[in-house]
Structure formats: structure tokens, C-alpha cells
Amino acid sequence: MEEDNLADGWFPESVAAGYDAPGGVNAPEAVDPVVDVLEDLADGGPLLEFAVGTGRIAAPLAARGMAVSGIDMSRAMTARITGKPGGDKVEVTIGNMTTTRVDGQFSLVYLVFNTISNVTTQDGQVDVFRNAAAHLRPGGLFLVEVGVPDLRRLPPGQDTVPFRMEPGREGGGYLGFDQYDVATQQFTSNHVTVTADGKGRFWRIPFRYAWPAEMDLMARIAGLSLKHRWAGWDRSPFTAESTTHVSVWQKP
Ligand SMILES: C[S@@+](CC[C@H](N)C(=O)[O-])C[C@H]1O[C@@H](n2cnc3c(N)ncnc32)[C@H](O)[C@@H]1O
Image (cartoon, rainbow, N blue to C red; front, side, top):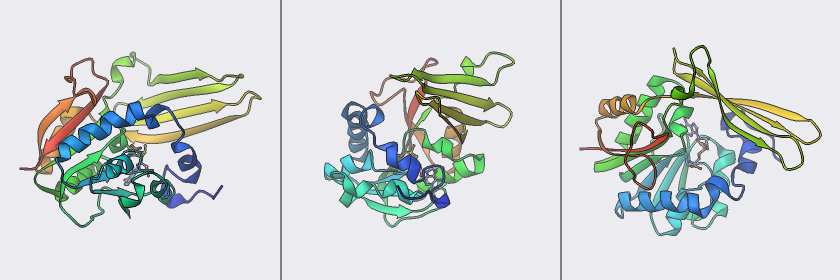
């Protein structure tokens, strides 16, 4: 395996190598509903994915004949796009979604799978909205899929919530915990894997959480206004019990 490159941020070769493992978020039943909604919203126009990664979503869109571009900071992740059906048609630019510009005016800019939270400052997240707006044609849409901050699960005096605990088949297993700082809106996802022979790996990824209302304000700063807010890709209504949201803002 190639060595990790620091420029790839939190998604170097060692992460990219396992990112496309079959099942889970890569299964057709997870990918197809996302691609259906994005294709519908783009209405035949070109799409731009911020944080395109390994092309999990962009490649199948391109395979359907849509014009798709993508920005990502990780060469290790984007190197995987061309190997997928449709992937050779995705126009990839290495860069930061807070600032990097690509040519063209897009019908739809989209940023899925919680990745807005990878930008860990408020200024940076506002820049993501501004950069999305700058790529949109008049009437174009910016879509974000992200979890609702899980603070309702945080009892007084506690800063950490478990989000996954899976025993391994032959011993060992996986533990995932999110640790929150409600004063700064920073949180870290903490991942622990232990193999059957007791060897372990512990890694942490920093994030910044924001409520839907704060994102509406970021959108307004960028000159966009809310058009849709769904609880998921099935376009079900967003409610107080929703754990995630798919929000769509429009450029006038
Ligand atoms: C969880 S993956 C999501 C990839 C893809 N969107 C998907 O749904 O499978 C997060 C991706 O975001 C990229 N990323 C994180 N912060 C970024 C930034 N500021 N600018 C560009 N890419 C970024 C990472 O390199 C990684 O490829």
C-alpha cells in the first residue's frame, strides 16, 4: 500500500483503501435513492459535488449521462473515481471546497454524507456556502446532507455519546463515540477497533456541528434561501425527531 500523504487530510491512502468496501453506504440501496434525488433536482443541468471522495455518488450520476464535476482535497480518495462505471466522465479538481473554483455554472452543487462538518470553523462553513453559491446559475440549488447534532442524547454532566458498538465475528470488535464541546460546537468522532488477538487501533476525527437554523443563516449570507428540508432521501418531512436532514437552498 502507498504511504499516507499529509495533503490528503483525514482521508489519506490508508482510509481511501477501505472506503469502497461493499455494503453499507456503498450498497445500491443506499446509493440509488441519493442519485435519484440529485438527478431529479439537477433537472438535466450540470452538477458539482463538493468533497467528491471516491465518486460513490458522482460516478453513478455520470453513468446516467449527467455532466458531473467534483472538488476534493484528497488525491488518494479521488484516484478511485476513474475505476468505477461512469467515473472516467467525472471532471475532478483537487482543492478545498471552501475556496476552490471550477469552470462552469451549475444547476446543482451538492455536499453529502455529513462532510460539511469536516470544515471545523464557522467561517470555513460560511465559505463553503459562498463557494457553492458562486458556482450556481440563477435559480440553481445547493444541497447538504448532514446529521442533526446528537445533543439530546447527552445527559447533564456528560460530554460523550456512543454511536456504534459492534462485536467482531471472532472476538474483538469496533466502538465509536462522539465527544462534544457545546461551548465551541466542536466534536470529535472517536473510533476504536480491536482484533481478535487483542491488537487495537484508536483514531479521532475532528468536526464542527451546526443546527439547521445556523445553516439557513449561512445560506442567507451567501445569498441563498431555503427551498426544501427533508428528513432523508425519501423526502419525508423534517421533524423534531429527525436525526438527519437533507436541505436544499436556492439562488435567486
Ligand atoms: C466522508 S468522505 C465523503 C465522500 C463522498 N462525498 C461520499 O459521499 O462518499 C469525505 C470527503 O471529503 C473530503 N474533504 C473534507 N474536507 C474537505 C475540504 N475542505 N475540501 C475538499 N474536500 C474535503 C475528504 O478528502 C473526503 O474525500
